[in-house]
Length: 116
Image 1 (cartoon, rainbow, N blue to C red):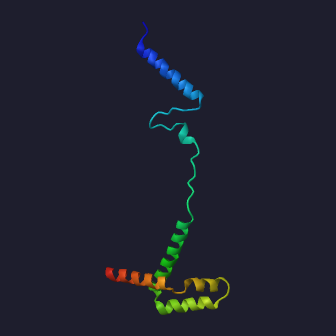
Image 2: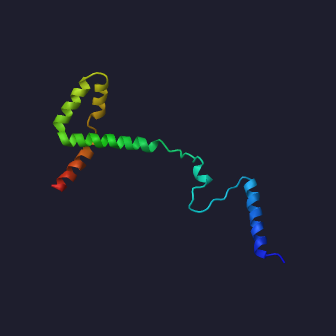
Image 3: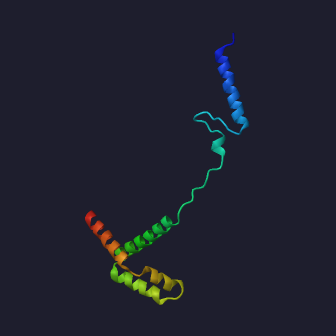
């Protein structure tokens, strides 16, 4: 009379050996098995979010500078940049006050006035 538990055990061992021969692996829970060391697929990220964040940072810095130094001083500095050549002229064009910068600087000023 054969032990039924041993027959079940050997059936499961045979199944594991067959699966392993086919290339499947078995890993215990909460261990670093073979699948942990396999290279992970790299997620392809979009280019839109980094560009939007860069634009928001540029407008934020411009608005903070505009609010910190004041309108007259800021416009004077931008005019001196625009009078230059090369990168200075490009920087002057980039740093000129636009509606978004003016709106953000007003919001920063309102926020600072609330803190007082």
